Image (spheres, rainbow over the protein chains, first blue to last red):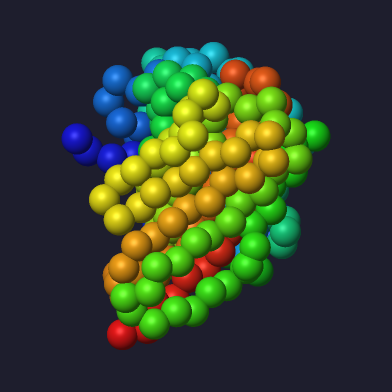
Length: 115
Length: 114
């Protein structure tokens, strides 16, 4: 089965610019997650979708971050305007069911550098 | 609030050694615990998922155990190989939440020397 696809792989932008990341989950996976991983730390959940509805976005900085999952498949995560502390790897993951009974499958991530 | 700790942060062993990676958590009311592997510049690969009712899971040379009462999980790697070099992370859902808010440890970076 094809894995979780993410693009771009790398992105370098200046602070206050905007950026968007794209994710295509594994076919049939209803649940999609965006995680932020700062260097040397474990990933932190930004937002979780169940089909095209938001389940949890409590840790999403909503003043600058936005995400959508149209038609319950692909998803985009946007940052506008970016700050230096947004430099991180942004990981998309998907799962067949809920995390208490099905494993998460991660994409390779997008490495964002904000200068 | 669930906290997950992994010690040591880094580990270097010669090829062929058996080794144990540790993961501890503060809230024993968990649904499951998952071990991941992360290669440099890559995403996370799920290795093993242990449900709260299970004591261990095995996959090839990997064996993960879970002791909820003591708030600990271990990942045992038998006969380590240079290809096992990576960062290993454990994670579990926060509290009784059914959301995807997995709480991750900071990981143990393993280096297996030929």
